[in-house]
Length: 308
Image (cartoon, rainbow, N blue to C red):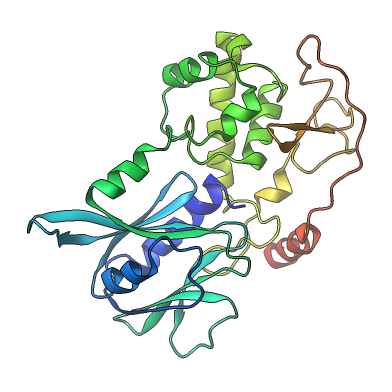
């Protein structure tokens, strides 16, 4: 599932490509993953896309202000979550549409902004006014913007597992499994540690590690594990730099100890048992077989060949 760096990469690409464009018409395909398809079709048509930005793991296509029932202009946006296999790309209207294209917005320059999602695990919603504000208030702080002090307070103020907290979108918006594991490895913190039991210095180290990793991943256009492509149709490259995620059984880059995998917060968590010490009283889990990642080797090979 695309996380903060992948969504940021796509949002920046769309900002360059479609910001300022007016939507002339909208066509919908399968709609069961859309909150309000009738409103999307009606309200999106005729509006101008003012800007495209990331909000956690969501993209927000900010639209020009429209008058509400009271005649007052209100903020509106198309909220887009890519799910596991979704992408949004501008294409010439003359280009055949890919299978599983479920939203087509015809732009005034003759291109079509297309949302494509084979598995339809994403979400699309048109939101305006108070509904938009309430939706965005559900999420926590942006990990790239949160101060060190606030980060430390949030992490040390709860007795949940640190991995669970990093994945909790009400604590931090945008972090997922990949970048949680990578950040914990860099900070030398075991994923099953309790947040409240981290020292202030450990929490500060994690804050720095998380921001460094996210920023580097954005520069490299995210991780293409299975289906992710940017607005130009190219895969990311950060998967070639993973230190923990998906490396079960491979030597730790710091100490050469084999990377292990356990389940924390219902998610596979990859870590070094030597560098990331387990909390006291935690039983040493059995070694598990590596989990194959669909499409990872194929994408890595494409990146390696295409980038020289």
